[in-house]
Length: 224
Length: 224
Image (tube, rainbow over all chains, first blue to last red; front, side, top):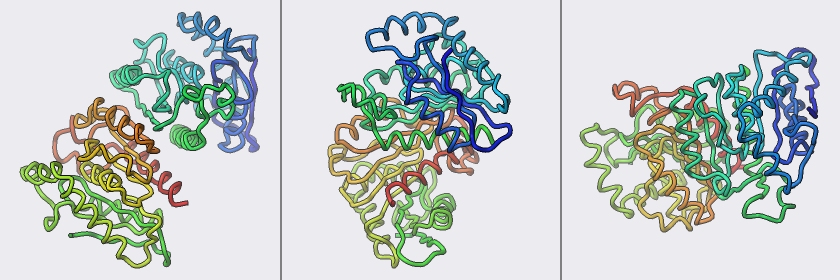
């Protein structure tokens, strides 16, 4: 697994946060977020690769790589389980205070980790896909779940939001969903605009700032 | 109009916030929130009565009083317009930095004020009804809109949330909706449990705390 470890300035045990990148793989975006989690929030952050050896893939490879991953709970769980093990193996990580965040498909990966019954305090997805491999395992979720979504994200429908809602509420999970009006996919990523598909991928400074704050508030709550 | 004015300790011009109470009318709940807005956030807060002379009404009178109000845009607008005038008439209120918040039907009143085209920076509803008298006026909204809702509130359906979403997005409004999983109506009001109807009215300390913070963050953003 390719990954990038970020530590707070202050020494001593600290909570740990996994950062799963957008579907294209580990790059500046997720690494930058992990660095901010370390430097601004004071947690150990591990930005993880989603695709094994490849650190980044192109749009043309996306479906070929994501398809098998999404179709196989074992494969997904192997990937997120390895990430958690890698974080827990680091010095100075308080194993009783772990959370996972992620972007786009990486957000789905954070939810998948929660669905394994892993002892994590929160799973937080930014413009994250809401379709998971094993919704029937929602009762295993131990921590809180947060989904931070563009209300106009063409990839996340009202039906998917309702199904996610029902899955979590029926399982008694403490969850929170935020919808940002007029906002689409990849709103946390300033590079999103480079794709030239503003109806689908578009950076939004306000939603980026607000969602970061909502994440930070939830992490503060669960790590208290 | 019966109302309750709350000032921050610091003298000098400050932003002003209208606080519209739950449907039962002005009482300790809204007055307590207005006091916190003044003392903790530093804004001038005016907790307003919804029902003219009556400061509080009973469940039996609720429909008789709310029915005509909900059916008449003019009546609703008269009521919220009077509240805004009363706030602006106070010394030390910065007229360029005004917001309205409200609880239950009071949240709807905050949205109604925004729909009049009033110069307010934000309209924020807690467990607020989303059905407004004049959705066709959404284009007149000048500020931001925030709805903070129990995901299991029996009085606020998925269809109503979608209609609210569409109304605001079609009008290009900057809006934000938060859904708290497992939470029903009146989650900000510790007295909600006294009604003995936990499937409908129930205090929720976490959602109360989180929604207060989301409100405070938005007020800070729009008053900056």
